[in-house]
Image (cartoon, rainbow, N blue to C red; front, side):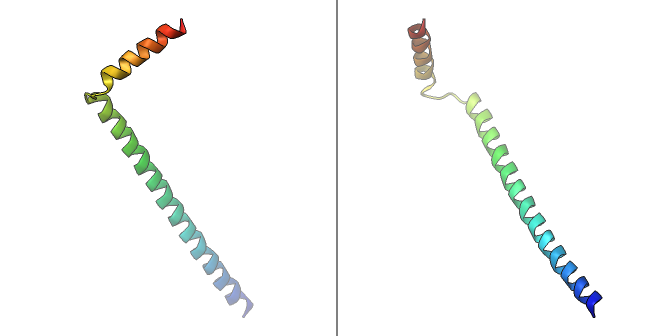
Length: 68
């Protein structure tokens, strides 16, 4: 009787471990998808002409001159 209880407990723990591993894999996959999305957005933004790009350049040049 005792071995079957231990076997049942092991199965419960194994099920919990499997559920936790599946949850971790989903979290990792979600994080990877987010990172890939951000990287894709940033690379697209770098190639796109922004209406604020010239203003950003002027502000950068001004702050560089002001620091000298």
